[in-house]
Image (tube, rainbow, N blue to C red; front, side, top):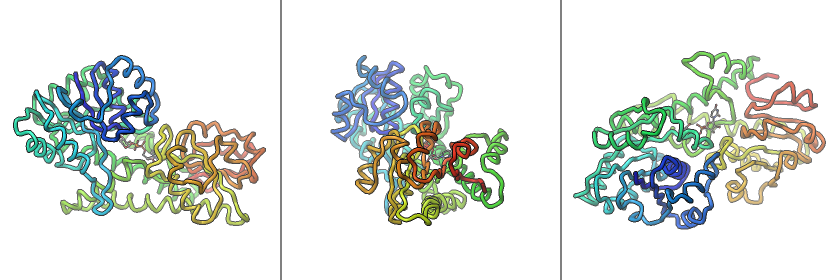
Length: 434
Ligand code: UDX
């Protein structure tokens, strides 16, 4: 099939590469000229495990193209996937639909034969109706259906999640659209997990799912706080909870707070959307508020740990919002670093993939290390803020030779306490009184 994808970000690019890999002819469209130039010159514009190899392969076989021209991508396409950003509006706190509406308005004129316009961006309930109206207004003769096709890709696992989706949610009442989308996903193993629902239900599913996951993360973080006071151990409590199939082990890993370009935005949008209908979502609202406060609590914990030291140096491991990605948007680590810098502390940072995105924000306020050992050299404490695999293989011996005081504050609970203590370190973690 011929597929046009509007938006080449963390959703659009992996989706375009994935559909090309499955044999479709894909044209990815973006209005950012520099980004399209880099992609056309074979330079991948974001890090995702396994993406680069498929990107080069499908560019080479001609199934994957990039353009800034909507006309070149949309004309003759069977499916046009809208995957543009829906940032939080700074004032209304709603998801800002300006890019969605602009894309819908521009693509309308290029629709020729029957086309499915699939909305993969996360949009509030009812937006697909607006998109339909905008396209009809722009091209009254167009033969098309607007379908809600929410994505559930996790950053850092986008390629894995693309090829192994838990479910494909399709929001439409059109039999023609159902048939076309079913054909598109024919090669997928999870054909039997197609969920054909109404468009509004499909739009709601994404927000409801993401908000639930965010609340689950916040829940385990609050349980960690309880364990620190009560003497229970959060790692043991999480395992004891997770064996219950109704709870499950996933998303019970305590940390410095949830971040990224989705949870913070989607939870706020969910609460705002509900408020607009006069419905108060107290649980999500509380999680949003206290997740935000958690980052300040974590920076105070770090500052207090070195309060007795003159001119302390803090080594920070991890700037991205989670492992496996180079994305620092809404990263708790970035907020925590900026908070401890306000307290006048010296900070050295290391991250396997995130430095290039962090540097334009942190600028020359920190020292950028090129390894764990380099970051810990002459430091008074080593703080782990992102659960990178590299950090799980912590080089205790090498670090103990260069760190000023052998103290580790593991705010992702990824190291083994016994091993750290055995190697001569003072080890602090989350959710334990020890
Ligand atoms: C999320 C959803 O998982 C995905 O389905 C949706 O399509 C997009 O939003 P993502 O934002 O990539 O994906 O990150 P995710 O893996 O969900 O983690 C979100 C945040 O929660 C990260 O900051 C992560 O560190 C944190 N987290 C996650 C925890 O602190 N503990 C956990 O156990 C899991």
